[in-house]
Image (cartoon, rainbow, N blue to C red):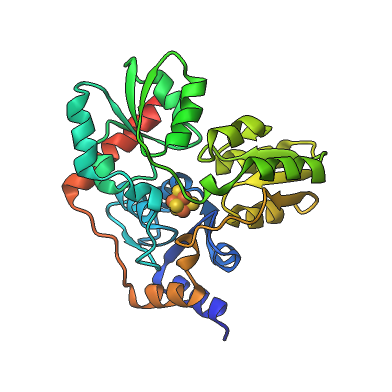
Length: 301
Ligand code: SF4
């Protein structure tokens, strides 16, 4: 029996579900029950009532979000050391200091934050709903963290609000350059260029569309275009190609890779599922407070 069949067999026996983020390795996406962005996956886990074991193939903050929304379920993270450098840029003590400096100003946190930071935030947001959340929150000033480029995107769409931005960034999305845009336009003049709002402002301004990963998937499916240049972590290209076999997808410049996202291997997944190791454990208080910020997001989005 090969490793894929072995994983499927153990999964069935344990009545588990495997969730994989859009940036995971192709073989991990292919074996997963569901592939999506972090919030889509966490919500998906709440819908599957019969499964009590969730194996989350992604990075830590994503598995934590799944745990926050599914506290009664056991959530495992196969690559236990897979963190997110962006999420790590917002530490609880620093966020508390900024809150103290700006009393009464609500904190809107991107889902790419630790459970502890979510717990001291007023509202969470995703890259898909961030402008809507900020627009609808009843305050003229908003502390927005941790991604400065996503903050730029939000500020552009919600100019009437004053955003206090955190100085964080995703090292993967910051690698795209103006030269990448120029070369892509020259090489594929008939292609749509779609980039993620974690890219630098000049890349956002030079692209045809600035969309979240779920937005990119929708755009690729609905557009009349046959060619697309994608400015996000290259793992998404596997899903775009699988779902749109009649269209062509290219990375903007060289393929940009998040090494933490590639730490999940079939071997680690099998071991974690088999032995039920690498469980995500959060205190009830953190779960309750972080969940409230996620629920507020649904209210404002
Ligand atoms: S791609 Fe960027 S935001 Fe996503 S997990 Fe990697 S470092 Fe974090």
